[in-house]
Length: 69
Image (cartoon, rainbow, N blue to C red; front, side, top):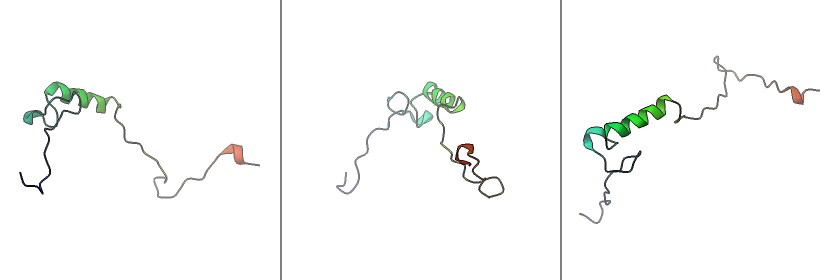
């Protein structure tokens, strides 16, 4: 190993931590891949979204009734 090259560590399954199996990469088994898929499909993993604009590209008016006089 060259001093310039970074040291590689064995990849680990993100579900159980076992070493990755090339056939199921990045997981160690079909079971862990299925667990991950189920988490995505059931909504456990979600990407937060902040909607700032309406469909036509304009910002909707703020209609907070507590601030109206």
